[in-house]
Amino acid sequence: MSHCNTFREELAIRYPMLVGDVGVIRGGRFHRLFNALRGHQPSDPDHRDGLRYPRQLQPRTPNHIIRSRDYQKDFPSKNVTKVDRGLNIHALGPDDGTQITISCSGRLGASISLPFPADSEDTIAHGDFSRWIIKNIDDCMRLADDLGWGVNRMEDIILVTGCHLAKSWANAAFSETRGGAEVSFSIRVSGHSGVHLEERNMSEGVLKLGPSGEVGYRTNSLVEHGPF
Image 1 (tube, rainbow, N blue to C red):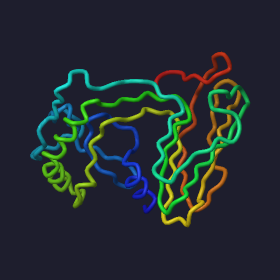
Image 2 (cartoon, one colour; image 1 turned 90 degrees about the vertical axis):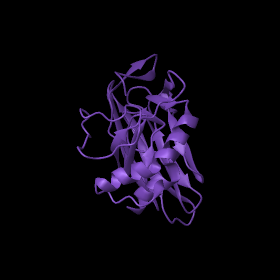
Image 3 (spheres, rainbow, N blue to C red; image 1 turned 180 degrees about the horizontal axis):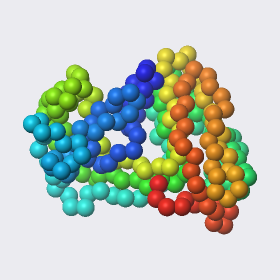
Image 4 (cartoon, rainbow, N blue to C red; image 1 turned 90 degrees about the horizontal axis):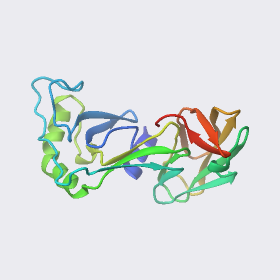
């Protein structure tokens, strides 16, 4: 669990979620309390009768969620770097492969790597989101406590302002290292549809790889089939 805590504290981003989700991290996963943009409706799957929910978040900017496509996106914290050893991801063809190494020069660090295209959603109304969580943090903590989740720090409550919907990913976390720690993994393309992620080396770090995905090819470059 120390590596889960490191990942949260270094990056404060998590598994797939929606903009406006409010929740906490338990067992290395994000658990949603409710979605602040939707307000809370009795028909919602996470509704609990008799609980007090914070008021709805209503950004003043219309159409404040920006959607885009990101290619080979990396989110490293301080002291963390990534090195590709071999072909660039976008140059991979059938039966090609490459190796990626993530290293940490400090005591703590974390990184998430999205090796293939991912759809992203981000709000531009950061000021409204910031003011909302400040005003409603006590109510969010009270709701988490009513659900028995044992939240006793404001930092445990997460308000999602952006997310990536990815088919494959690699998470790395480094806790209490002596510097020079690293993990590495390989990406191998098999035929015209199979993508395989495989752990290669571990040195004072923890690596979690997301599932392999189905991809296709266009002009010798990787493209995805369907939304990520």
